[in-house]
Length: 89
Length: 89
Length: 89
Length: 89
Figure 1 (cartoon, each protein chain N blue to C red):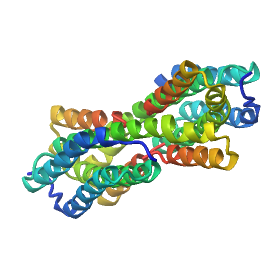
Figure 2: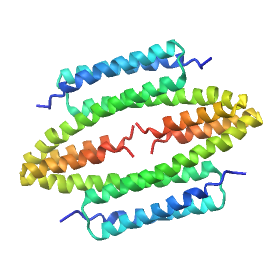
Figure 3: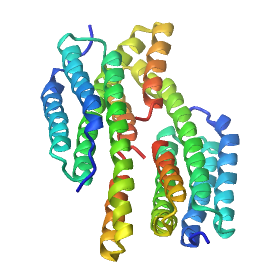
């Protein structure tokens, strides 16, 4: 069973609102720097959600894999985490 | 007059859809790594929109400021751009 | 006993050479963009060393902690990793 | 004539010292997290040098290009800057 990340839903609702807000700013021909600042805020918020889910994943899935002592499973989980970390978006 | 960024609206609609998709994945208790991959995709897409608006800003506003030869305006625009670039979200 | 990272020494020697090269480029008044490209290359190389050491750390120390079943130790290791990951340099 | 970045040489000397320090830490089999913290510090310092040179470049070269009113030169300079910014190392 995978960890429950429903604690992130409120943040994701706010991020969805931020994206809608960015669209509105573009439609209203707002100043680029104000739009860019809002995009940064949305990226920042998404980054925090990502960190939080990654932490649950390491504490939940990665840890369970190690506890299971199944070598293939452990290596796969570690490779998955490293793959995620290597993409620096 | 600020540059028109309405070419980014289609991407922002897709990003909004991605955020909704992430919420659904959380509600469905999908595997963390799949959720994290989707978050990366949304961050990546936001990053591309940001780069594109920043380019328009440099080509439009920063360039106009330099052409206006108003020293204070030029410095302010350059400071704004550097301020945006220094936040590495 | 901590993992052996001596496999990274060759990369770090190259990075040291890159940093010396950047200093030389500045002394020779080379074009900014060429210097910036070289700085990116050094940052990229440092990032690869970091990823590699982080992987060893997760495979070595974090895993040992989980295997030891000492709850405090496990939480401390996970917190350390998350702390490292949250700094997005 | 390109801008003078010799104000960055002191920082680059310190970064070179940090890289040597990281090599020593690896040779001394220091704890991974301490090594990783030192790598972050070196990356951070390189990032600050990069930001500073980029700022000089925008204030110097990009601005001169716009002032020269040579359209090809302006586009090339803006493309170079965007190319640098798009690589997120």
